[in-house]
Length: 139
Image 1 (cartoon, rainbow, N blue to C red):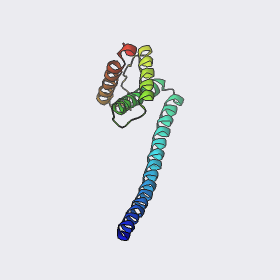
Image 2 (image 1 turned 180 degrees about the vertical axis):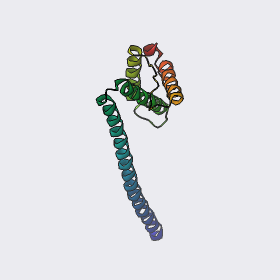
Image 3 (image 1 turned 120 degrees about the vertical axis):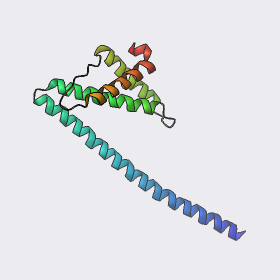
Image 4 (image 1 turned 45 degrees about the vertical axis):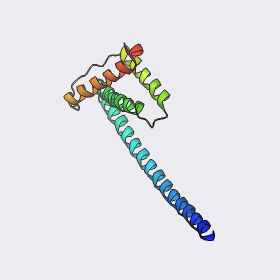
């Protein structure tokens, strides 16, 4: 009986140690991903600001529209992800974007910074998602 209790306590202690180590690594990875995301966002803001300050407003708009297309595709993937618990927030964001796109339809302009074929492909995918998922809003 004592060996059974000892084995159970040893197992629980080992499991607790593994959990603490795993939790620390997970937290560290979360912060690395968060910081990388912030760097990515700042780089995009800087690119838009540079274009605006250089009088290239159409480049800035095209850049923002392209980034929004990528974000729509990403949110569409997350919307269908079985593990997401943010579904209402994702739906609200996509509905908001669908309304925006209804007011200002996507016009793809070729600029020196864009890969035109890729931009068209992503824009079409984003538009398809917005119209299929939110047809009452986007149509």
